[in-house]
Image (cartoon, rainbow, N blue to C red; front, side, top):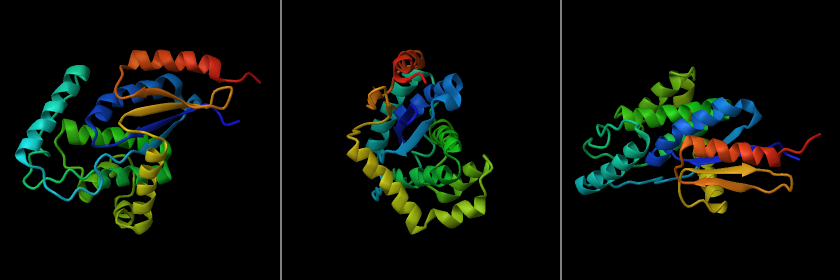
Length: 214
């Protein structure tokens, strides 16, 4: 039977996923490779082609305030307030998939870096050059990254993630699933944000019953 692992449905431009990023870091520190995390891009707003109106930007920034209050993480509106800003989540998701191809563990780290860059630093992660620069920070070959970025197969792979998310019945992000248990079943750890101590407690309890002794 497959070893217990987590499946994390997320989006780089989902503010509650940004809020959940320290929790993912806590899980990785607590369990390491004993509890691998499979990352799947959820597809928050892929393919958006209409620039955000000022009212929509203000409403979104209001949601960010709630995330800040719950997590203490910093927010910077600089990217959001760019003239003609397109809230298209597909480029950032595709960038994560490109990094995941070479190194699934690094993809989790890169996801967190994109979130910090967009929400905390105001960088526009809808731009390929910005995404490449952030990937290069983690040792990814920048030229190779950009060469693949607009390729048809990478786009299809990314949209394949969105399809997986939909077929799994995921309706919001972050969503964290654990499995298999002794019976081979999977279960939802959380739909939406939850604090790290709560998540770690659930996982510790689940692992005690999930792992079959050999």
